[in-house]
Image 1 (cartoon, rainbow, N blue to C red):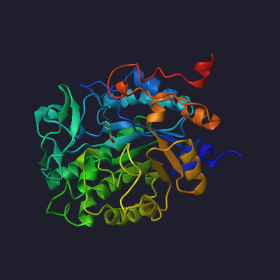
Image 2: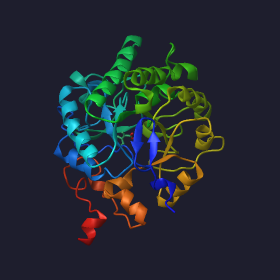
Image 3: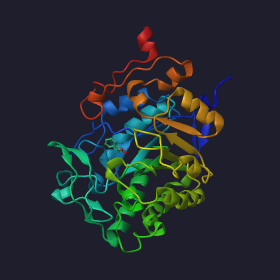
Image 4: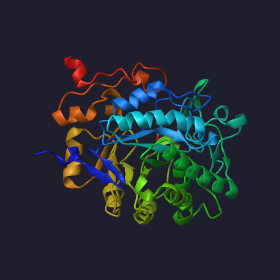
Length: 364
Ligand code: 8OZ
């Protein structure tokens, strides 16, 4: 019997050949000046097109949305043209690909911002976090609070990026609402101390997320829009007084959008799946009616079981996809996996990026 993990699935309007998703992975190999991707990205994503869905590395929607060196953008025509080569290659190889739309908010550094300005955030509260700059690994800078007019302009930047994503040939987008970046900063009390319509109650703190979703889904359709959340993750120095209550408000409201999927980082991003008493991602999943994508530390057995039991419709794998371009084939055959090399996760060239062998290469 073929396990459900290996069977097709319709994520909204996106028809997937299996339930295995390549998680968004920041790899810092884009051109730092232009934010364009290059031949290496074409090859990297093409090699991994056996996934049911590829989610690109986080991709900034505007120059101020950038927070690390050598991350790609999706706000200029040159970037669109560079991504078009990636989407063409993935489609030619039979895969599907969405671009992750990203605004880092306060997880940035003045040296990465236009004219060396301070990064922007809901409130002028620095994150206890680090980022990669030209000078190396540096503490994130103190941000300034966005005005209400700037919030509206940022929503418009998300809409513009979604339109450009379709122009670039993507099958859809994933809105990055996780890991302590701008949307998560609005959602959570540790980064949002606004006293206007965007701060205070969870209704207000979630306003920015829903304005972004309204704009993006109006532009390209809910059925081509995914959303990533990390309700309980402390990633990038984020914190919240009551994440269970906050996300019990947010998640049911997502049902109205008919999203392609909801992607949940279950626990601490890239870390523990354990949660304190009173916090539960299963309880949040129970409130959600659309396709649910699980992520965080899944292995083959966990993924098979999750899809078989209905705990997830889709399972995203991160690090295993770095070292195994043919991960779906390897999981299907229960073959051994290559260990990814941490030293080449962030930055560099072809080494540790497009040179991992497939099973076929190993037996050739
Ligand atoms: C690792 C390094 C830099 C950025 C995320 C976009 O955590 C990221 C990221 C991960 O979502």
